[in-house]
Length: 382
Ligand SMILES: [Zn+2]
Image (cartoon, rainbow, N blue to C red; front, side, top):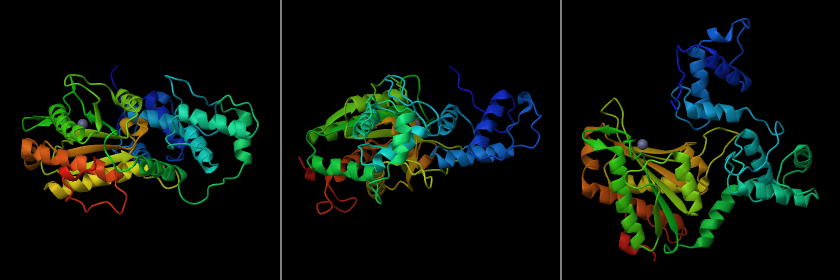
């Protein structure tokens, strides 16, 4: 399937539909001339601005182009709680802002939701059933008018603090600092026919796979069970990779990429975790943020890559994985300095060690944690 992309200067019915969605969301002011036919609808400067604003709110890359990902998130954003029946459908999960509102509401009422992600999965269904039972309604796990009404009637018991954040860190605390028995999924980006970024003789798919193997060896030596999302020549899509991580019941996921840019000066390492930077709709994985911060700081402390910091994003892999996931963009292959570092096997070893140390530090209680850049592999807790 070819991907449709709409941006500045495009026109036609699809642009009209995009504009309507932006108007409904209150991001784009309605146009005066409502007589304009859909064929003449133009993707003008104002639409471009509105799309960028929407992308920024939603943790997408703010490039102003409506690609399939932005289109999907636009589609999800239009649902308000009560607009449609909500239920768990295996293989065809309902996704939307209404599901996010439902999850937040259930959390406030003290029901167990791992993460407010807007996806109606089995855990959300379970929480809905518990809720229905608690109000003496038939517990079918389907949210219809009666359930919406019951939800609206009850006032929250959790005030202040974030219940899902507490629950996430509680689980880490319970699992203890020892590494053996933990499961980590390593996700080398791209692969197969998809080579990813390439410049200065480097291919992203190959770098990612090589780095994954180096991390795999080191983690396995500490007793961690390690799984890779792909073989050398395969290229599963992001949702398939996320499903794989969920099925292995991984504790953590590390996704490996490198970046490129037309400007050869652009360089450095950045890490990403699940979340949006929005104000009141603040959906984020607190532990994912902490893990990403640890990976970022350990790499920056042990290498001379420029620090491009840690950022919240809603990319598919970050969103659909049920555990803390970090995506590392390890330098720019288009930057001669970064490229020569990345092609050095010694450098890749240092990065692999930095990531393994970050995994350990997720599980160290504050009184056992060490300063960044000093923990050695031999000191990891077996
Ligand atoms: Zn990539």
